[in-house]
Image (cartoon, rainbow, N blue to C red; front, side, top):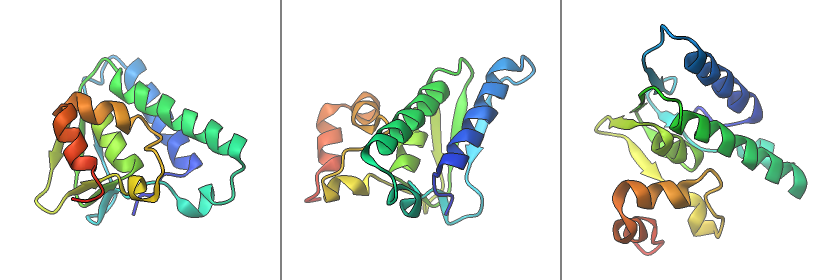
Amino acid sequence: MNALNQRTWQDVRAAFENARDDDTVRGVILAGAGDKAFIAGADISEIAHLTAVDAERSSRYGQDVLTLIETLGKPVIAAVNGFALGGGCETAMACTIRVASEHARFGQPEVSLGIIPGGGGTQRLPRLVGKGRALQISSPER
């Protein structure tokens, strides 16, 4: 389901740094492997064992990678096929454009658990859809 673990974040960062630095790359298409998920979110088995300090460090690293994507200086297209949940939704929001298949599903399920979206979703969603719609979308009652 293309979960985001530390190794994946490192690989994504390296790929985007290479794309940024390569003048022959004029844009990037980011897609998940398979058709079930773009990115299904964080690797829960990995984060379950983190200390508070490690979790904060990991969250900042992910935020830095998403900032790199958002400010790449080249268009980044999120090709969303399947689930884009949590960090996957935030990754899609960091891209310049999102192109979604008919069965794509976006969400921030962590908010129903009382967990704040750690990758910038609280800022990117209102910027993309407006504050009012962002509040409607993220409301647990919907």
